[in-house]
Amino acid sequence: MRILMESSWQSSEVLFHTMQSMAAACLMKSFPELGCVAVRERNLALQGFDNGYASSHDPSDLELEKFTATQDTLRNWVPDSKTAVTFRFFKSAVEYWELLLSFFIETCSTTVDSPSFIGPPQPCGNLPHPFTGISDDTMSLLARVGRLIHDHRRKKASSGFISEELFDSFRKDIRQARQVERRLLAYKRPKISEMVDPEDPRTTLAHLSKLDEAYICSGLLQLYRVFPDLLSDRYNPWNAVDLYDAPPPCKRPTETERNAWLTSLAMYTLDLLRDIPFESRTRCVQPFIFVAVAGELRVGTQAVLSMDADNEEARFHGNDAIRIATARNFITARLSAYRDVLPLRKVMNISELVHHTWAALDSGKKNVYWLDVCVDKRLSTLFG
Picture 1 (tube, rainbow, N blue to C red):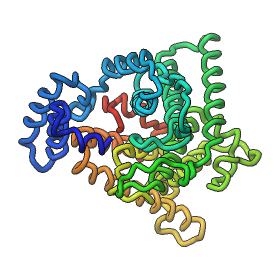
Picture 2 (cartoon, rainbow, N blue to C red):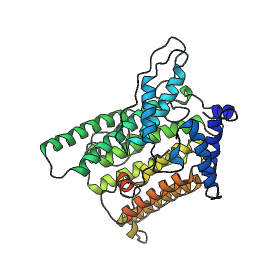
Picture 3 (cartoon, one colour):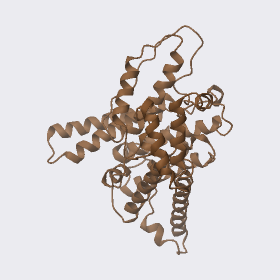
């Protein structure tokens, strides 16, 4: 995509004005007067581009009509051997768009069977896409997680008295969640030797591999938070080695134990991103992970009270509080730095959501979930 932009921006009016508008949107923090330039350039690009990047200027604009139209275009596309690679590239980009939308709206799967052609072998579905940074299989799984959670939360929010029909529907949701969990747990990190190199000196194949696993972990975080029985059925004290191949459960965990396990998974996920330098181009697809992880960085009351204690157990809880504070600072620092390189208003929206989520956790409120905070505060946006 970057190579395409570099070779075409001077000959394409749409690309020229799009890049001007996006650049102005990113510079608005330092030069607020560029807001007018961003809007003007966007309007010029719209004449030929038809509103393809509105969320950079209005974070709440999820561009649903554009998404639906793009899905229809994809379904009606009949690729031949010459356009097969382009079709797969476009299809994966649309599936990533669907992933970002799936937690907020009712979406239909973009999955379209790619036709078979005679010719050289094509990249496998478990290899990171050079534009989104994650594999097709991962995108498909995360979009399924999003659709399942959106539908389940919608039914739960609108339910009054529990009927047998609603109860059966909830049981069906849990069965579907177990199916998705099994697929997530079957994950194998892509082999770097088999991955397609994006030919970007700032983005190594190792970055893409770690990002792909971070998305898988984010999917597990969502399932185990919304469907706690799944975690209870596999519960053992946290051990990263057993994440994808859990031994038989040792006990039925308490709510505190479940929360601690999810916090450990969140920290593990965050460590994957720590290994990716800020300069990596994968930064544009990391915000979703930061939001998903932030919702599990809770500091227990016991940890706070133990900061000044002398005994070994108390020091353990105190160290845990320090680790969580450090993790929160890392997310805050990354999001703050993103304001200089990504669309300002969208990054501010994401940062506000993260801090509202932490405020809810710190207030002692139970069953805090970032998606509920997002809806309550009207902060829905595309986290990518």
